[in-house]
Image (tube, rainbow, N blue to C red):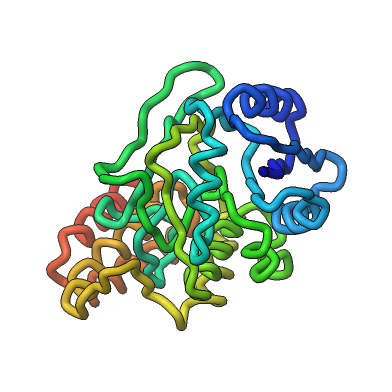
Length: 286
């Protein structure tokens, strides 16, 4: 049923993941691990290469720092993937995508998630939205786990030309599926644990800018029901402020650029309290 595809740089984590999958998946599978320590290939190139070698019809592109907590999850996921219009299934995603520099996650209104954020050093917290039903439709998904049918991947490979590193490939891939008429989902009926808090580096920011250059003219995107023009206009400043605060918090832009971005935001949204808060944040860092 499933071809589990892992781009690995930590063999011990990949081995632990295989043991976890063997004891939880509940269906036939193969485990394809690409040891990327020496080659250092971009994750899109690795995923495409491994997918071409896969023998099963359901592909699971997954990070090695993952553990499944639900028994027989393979049966559950396979049933949903078999739906003709199904795109990708994951465990965290966004129900909108605005033309601002952020990944899949934005304000709470547009965020769906169902996973445990753990730490290899111990400690964890459940990240779960208040969603009803086994699946929630989204525009984009986080790449901790992306499950698709082989024919869906064949129609829309990972873009290894534009995204040569390890960031934004997930947002790009699921955006392409969504724009192609597929339905992407966050799975609420299977629980996984992700032993990572993410990485927000200058490389991440550069990949986000490449994503915006590629898709900017198609944004914003929303799942059904469509938002009204008034709703889009009302929520846009909140999403943009969320994106700018991420850049400021992680020091991804030089101070002069940060000041210019915040001043521009305040000029366009003079009554948004987020602008004042960002200005105060900049003042504290002087």
